[in-house]
Image 1 (cartoon, rainbow, N blue to C red):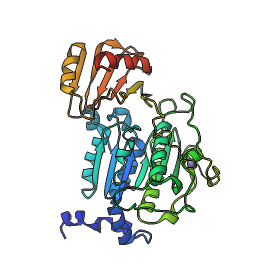
Image 2 (image 1 turned 90 degrees about the horizontal axis):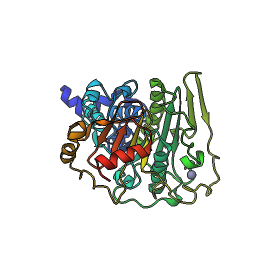
Image 3 (image 1 turned 90 degrees about the vertical axis):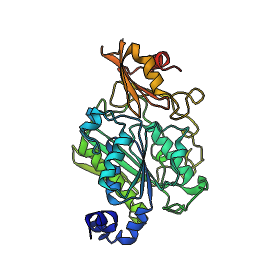
Image 4 (image 1 turned 180 degrees about the vertical axis):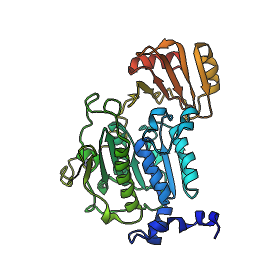
Length: 381
Ligand SMILES: [Zn+2]
């Protein structure tokens, strides 16, 4: 058999199909499965890498950011060329995964995962994987999981610690999905608490450590993401019984690994989301201006009424308008550059990255008002 043949069939998964829980049948199930990875940073790249190598059929990867030099310490799908070429993370991930496994279909979505379009990402999806750095969007994923009856694998890491939790939502508020049968199903008895059952409130802004204030150790992220990817593989190969139903907590510095029983996290029916079916985040409880973890930057997402429809903003025209104000370059995905006369809090020029859907990342300030002002003056509200 030629190398091309063995790369195209199931032989490449031999060391994995040897596992009794997987076998040829599990591998076939995995091949028809579709994972949604939201956030393609440290957690997301490790998850996507593991699932693509394992032979998942389809991955949809959603990320709003562009690869930067400080990402390379832990974000395994990116390299120095991605930094130099200012490639969006979702596109860089797709490019790398295409070289790792040609059998996997990867959809790259360079977008903010906001409540308005959240449900549009779910088409054909079998599992939701959390590669995020903020609770606001995690609650949105949790709402989606409960409403659409999808498994949601939460993960988070900061400094040398991390947590992971797999949510199999109670089916009482599940809506019927159009299209094919879901790949993973479970009964009410097999359901777990949802994310809001376990964490009813997000930590208030400024109170929790972030990767900006506390740093993050690369291998810790890989440990958490590996646990997430493992649970996804169990779910997608039909091994529901083997899924970890506890909250896993890792401190790689003190060498503590703990598993918390969360089965009694909330009385059935008491949780606003999985108990009462109120999907607060999906209804638009989130904000439209976000300070970005890890950088002195603010993201602006235009209001629904003011936003151009996706890919509708003429970046060429905007680049021409910005030309007198600084140095800007453009590629097929975005426009970016620095203003000559707008100085940020550190004394460096303020930088703008603008996407075709009107979303912008303003770097050099952490103040939403300053960012809004820059956006309004140079991009237009
Ligand atoms: Zn709940």
